[in-house]
Length: 248
Image (cartoon, rainbow, N blue to C red):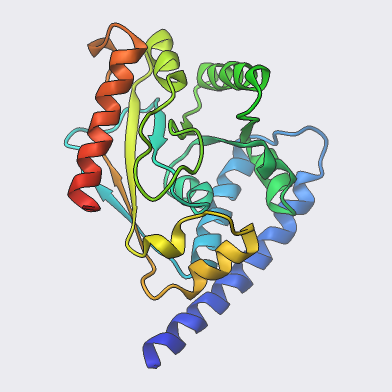
């Protein structure tokens, strides 16, 4: 009873913090131009951490990497929930690739655009091609980029395949991939299936187990591969092994 009351108070403080950050970030997002610059990106990451606080999630970063992470990288992760959209930037300095629908989300969409989030319509070949160009341009600027090789939320387990896009970009640019394996201890509560976003967020807030584990592993050097197919398969197999370790 006491533990539950403490968590409710913690989330209430989190929503106050989030509200106080959202108002100025939203107003600043109305300034001319979509992408506002490094200062806004830094503020966005603080906003994401406040959002994690408001949802009452115990977000843990587990550094499984044996070597220091590179300064410049492509970050990939499995994608079982909507929570990754704030969980990843809360922990990593990255520009994210998100589905086009996020752009129209109330408040969140405009703030995400201003922070440098890129968007893709996964059903459009033209949009996917434009997303690749956007990612390469952002990498050329020295930014790190995060995306999900499963191509969206596919389930509570690793999808049976990854798409080749990120591996092709890594091979052509020489930029390594940093893999993150995501494990929500209360998988059913975090998994995003047919709920709308408010329903999903409310379910996350009500979960009895609020632990979110983000495991980061050593960067994968594209020079170890000759083609995107073998690169893809090798990384997908690593995710299957991590799934067996943490979920099975």
